[in-house]
Length: 406
Length: 133
Image (cartoon, rainbow over all chains, first blue to last red; front, side):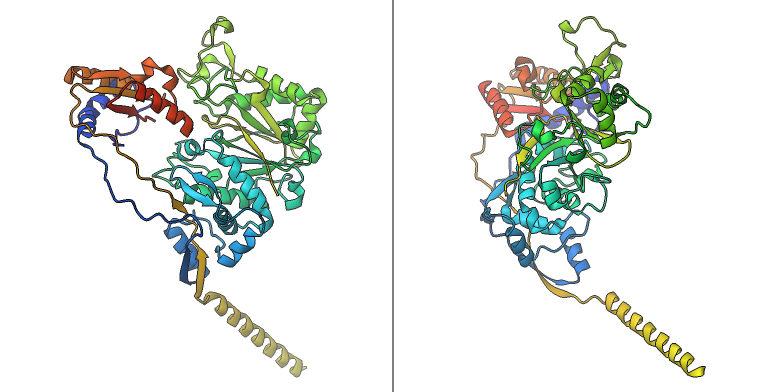
């Protein structure tokens, strides 16, 4: 494939400006179209994916870390050296064969074997008993519904989001209460670090070449990994159970999100009042790229962008809502109704109400969503009047939930 | 009264030396021989038959593909005008006008394959695509 570079920006400029860029690029396009030939090289000897080669190195721990970073084998935080002994110990945490390829990771299409899952687990600080969780995370991320390629190469600051439900929360000590997304949560942090080591090193999503994120995000260093606080969920039904899993199943749910925002409502007494302020946050999330009247069951289109979002409800907020909304569906339905923006606040071309919507003008409030399945939530965190709102990245088809198989 | 004081001073010096020596040990971390798993992984490379190259656009079928990004259609519209003006024998097809289902970021290998099949059906000699942002 031949490329002609046209300098940024191309989007968000006027018609005369973009036409001028086409005029300038045209001779180069014709030249490339008629003269470019790919470099044909002999097929190189194919290195088997398993076993991974070993590196011998003499130096201090600090020097070893520097060597890893210099060779593109780490992403800036220190790693625990993946010695053969430590990797072998990690592999004891699963019955899967070490040579099995569990994901061919875009954009570089590197082959991730079970052995390398163990190696990255060691590097990130995971323990052998975390292997089933790591493998479930990999399975979820590799789903085409997640769109890892788009998420990891976009100019947007995407965050891999992992929600964990079920007995595994307490079995492994996964954080789901006070400060669950902060420090002192070794399992959450190691899984989050593992995800981005895999994405950058095996997948090759490294800035500025393949990862084009304009500013990036901290979630692209340590991904967002959080457990649901099922004990303090007033609806007594977890997100995983909503999705058809049993309460005894340990489940990982993954999706790619734009940057989250926070709801800090200290004054709402009624459920409706709190949902109104949450709707304000939902309406403003991922501004500029969100479409109106989106549908969960329709694919990616300019007029169907950002078609779902998650709320991470603090338990106290959840209690306030539960007083007036006894079913989770009624919560989502209310939020769908209230999450509106006036037409003029949508990006140009992104909001095209159909005829059946009726008459509208620039000031007409138009909902972002059309169905309750587009506003999902978990209860998580500890005491306090805080909730978070995480809208999905635009090409994600749906959140992917998989069982953690022991 | 003097003896205990001497003992205390001696003890303080010894403790100080111990601390000093232990700090020296930290500062002079010894290099060691490491053996570690290389986590880089491998990429499977397949040999593919290359599509035939063209050395002129005269008489060729040129398909213009837009992925829905802002201004990509405007850029390609202008390219189409220039192609018609400079190379009138070429047949220019705006994919985004003949099949609107292709106006998208494919998002998956399956969808990329489907769009490629649509283009193949148009018997394109070459595709010019806009990847704008």
